[in-house]
Length: 483
Length: 120
Figure (cartoon, each protein chain N blue to C red):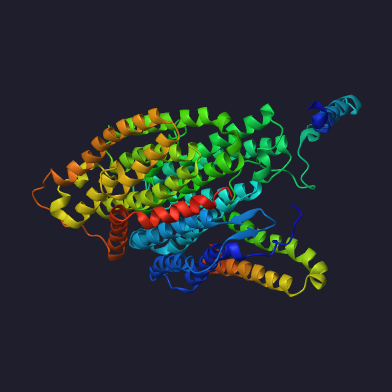
């Protein structure tokens, strides 16, 4: 720990520093731009994030930094690219929403987006409990503010549900931070070390296991695993839809990276200890998420519960603990990111100014906007796991990896619940295609939003038709994990 | 295991004893006055007569001013040790401090531009 040779090695953090620079640039530009002309800030954010994403294919970010507290590898790079891509798509798709609803406070929202992105990008590389907590918090706090963004002095205005959304997210974030922090204090007390690599080698005391299970509970809050999921639907319902799209994808991916770090990187040798607890969490997350999605009549709440169920499938990939499981997790995350974000962006396009996202608002969408209706159908089919879009491969690979790891019963349960999931996804699709309206009003969606939806659609279909490049990248990244 | 945690237990016991001890000692040692003048129970406000309760509403502007103050407060905390060591640390330290001050200056500019210091 006293090795200072990597103290000033910033090479693994080049992409993260570029995000910091972008945040400062957005802030400076916000100061200079006159009121009413701030729309460019969202476009600036989108272009900068896309540029950094492109840069990630050129620079070498592997190696240790901060005396071994941070480690850049192909695994962390995969996550960084995922976050940068999602961030760019959200900035692209959300610019018009933000410009129309909050013209005077756009810069701050993009600044918060970049801050939370920075926390997410740092998290997978953390090899030290302190950096882990700092990255975790940097990720969590801006999300609360972003969820509260529509709040205005008008108590009955379109942002009337935002305070509830933000408060629930805030309380859960604070509780999960407190619980995670407590668990980490116990881990430190039991092992005497802050380095993740030293934790499993500590004396096997009850204190160590109490610390581990406390951390698991704290992380479960963050990813919204049952029974720590109650905040998810209310927060999704009240927060601005582009923010929800981001919230449903990026923090979940970061939370699963955190799970992988704690369970596999730190406590991989103690799998027998945590496996029963994690299997229990996975099974009830799958069952409750899928079951509660069925009766939902609001598209955002429906996708909230479906997201909880999707977390269950991703947890399968984590808990099996094999390298194949890691590769599957990364592939699943990449596919889920474009699919779920795309679905939320379509909801944004359709329900734009409406106070809710009731399924009735999607009636006759195929007449009003055939392109959007088709995109939404593809996203829903991908979430349900229908061939040959990306969600099909993701679920198939998860089941294959779980079967190889000897969890055949879990595969059976997951497959049965997938059929149930098809039912509630098709309820939304039914409203889109089978219900007609007498006077179809065209959907007014901005160019940026449409472009973001098309990019998500291209990813969903493209990764599904030709999954090999992503699979190869995920395999290479998984091989670098835990090395 | 107990030998590893003994210092922590002793520390906790001492902290508890210190707190309880002070309260008990004050009870035992305090001079008890016989008279019951009303002025004895009044809050001492630097010679001013205390008016109202402490539960009043403060203007939210104070909160913004406090935030801007923290900006410079933290700056000073980092600047002072830096000035003592900058000679030995060389150009890297100077560059880092310039970046740090640049970020703070940007924050200051933001606060000014958004009217954080206008007292409306």
